[in-house]
Length: 166
Image (cartoon, rainbow, N blue to C red):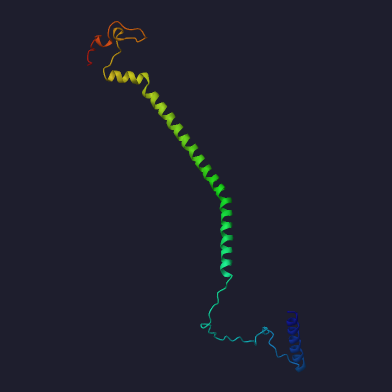
């Protein structure tokens, strides 16, 4: 490459010397200098290799097997590195989903307990009893089961009828 610079320098100085010898400069000041290799032409010749036969390489099979083996080894190594991390991330997502489901179930349980307390409130039960014409039992109708054997058979005791009831 160093020789090209000296060739260009020589050609420029030669043109300047020729121009100064005649007294008038013949070069256009805006013209570009010629590029190196302008006079070189490349010709391409058609080559017909259809009659040539490719010879089999006896080592190509071994190289292929070793390349496949190394690729499989690298794949197994990569999977063994990535698989535990992926399993850990999945377990984290499952844990968070289980925590969210637990919280939802706890909220539903609280709502059901509040609803049950409202359904079993004494004022509501009294309202339902009044709507169905139910009254409190008389003291003679109450039988206490405190472990003592009652006199007679419980099934044979007469139950007085309540007016308006069955």
